[in-house]
Length: 267
Image 1: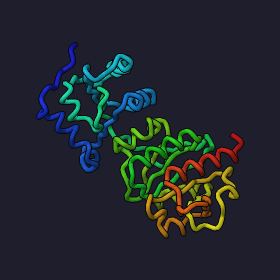
Image 2: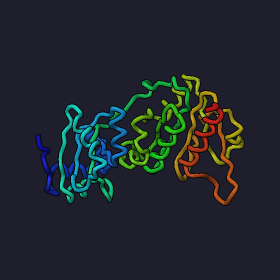
Image 3: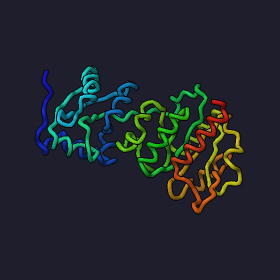
Image 4: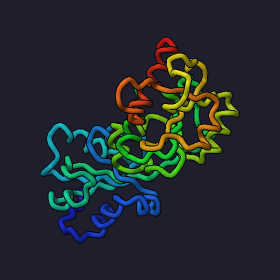
């Protein structure tokens, strides 16, 4: 069967895709957009449910055609061809690569987490920039974190730039959004020590036991953790700053702490 072709910029599906650039529309429709072939491939490999694949033959190179064939083989998926002007308008990115997938927002619950792997948790409070949130997911996946837990009024997990910056790690790493108080209660119930990162902390991160069950807690790019979160955590640690700056980027801080935890675990 031939794919349906969209050639009009005023098509309703194109308008819907443009709306999905906005968080409110994503949340109202319960959908997200996945772009970049490597990210789409990781969603496919992880068995993440996919609704519709849009493709543009003019923009899709030969190396990506097997991915399109694998997407076509999914039961129940809709496949739609677009002209280049339509794909350019619909795409979240400035330079689309010829594939765009619409998928539902799958939101796992905190109580569904499996902590048998033994890696640390990461708790993120109100991280604002999609690139930072996605980078932390990528780092956490690489460093063997058990899960990333997100709270506060930051960027949403289903921002397409979060998925892109994670390089598809989102689809393999358990990631849960929940209220801060529920996350802290979960850690207490499971005997997990919450370790907050703060430039003002007297304890150096490398002098702190991160091999035990821990949750590494990081805050916003500009203000760090809220006073309430700092007060609620069990331990507060700092990363030494020897230059003029007073703190690292939140993704860089996550990398330092996660790989120190990995080192202490002897991995």
